[in-house]
Length: 331
Image 1 (cartoon, one colour):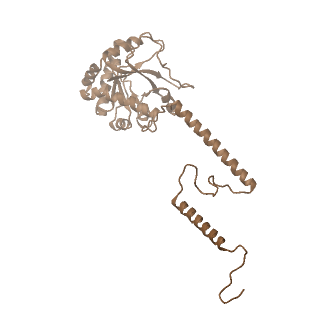
Image 2 (tube, helix red, strand yellow):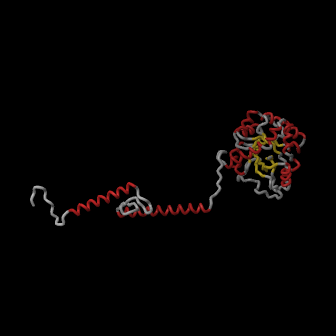
Image 3 (cartoon, rainbow, N blue to C red):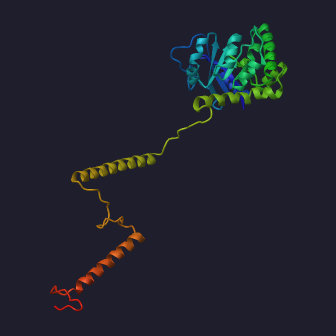
């Protein structure tokens, strides 16, 4: 499956359904609509891309993701990045100078670092700085439509900067997107791979840039927002109505039983008596429908035998009550 993670979104754009339909025909399966923010963040952060889209004729087999790109100009914006990331599926930042690029690679928690390669950059890419961002799961984005639809200087800057970025990153951690505002600026996935090959990226790495690496961005972003530390994803599937009713009845019965037991104990305490075990009159542990133990059976047999001996001794005593004389004694 091929991915294009940068399609600019404008509210009430009449050309958006045509662009999405053309991307679907080119072979893309997942497309991310991009909302750009420049300057201060709004007081109330919410997703500017509605779900579902108000436009009609959207291809049903095309998966739509929602992305936000924040242009880094001031350091105080970084405090609300976590709140901004919760409102969108993908969070991207766009550095404007070397300081903000170093900040994005080291400390900012984002998914994509998008660079405007159509402008002349006043710094060089360093492998140590880029590798630090790649190890933490961030990906660098190359947008090709800026060189196709722009003037000659934008095309020249795009080729120069993309070549430098590919060389500094050693072809790792790159994704290729279109950033096309219309369908005329879109190209097929294999055309984008061939274009990156001209810039110095191998064909294997180029194929991963539009498939594997882009997919890793979506999966990692989803784990950050729905899982615990990106490892555990807990999903509540609900319970059946019958099970819920049984649990409620069991809780109510247990509560009534506890209340009844407490009432009996309180009544016994008032009467000054100890609570007796429920069972037979002898106070044994036998209950209705349960067999007695061997120890209890022996105890009862011994009790019955001792009771019989006492009865026999009582029968041998004369009725007059006279005590028989001993040998040698006279009455």
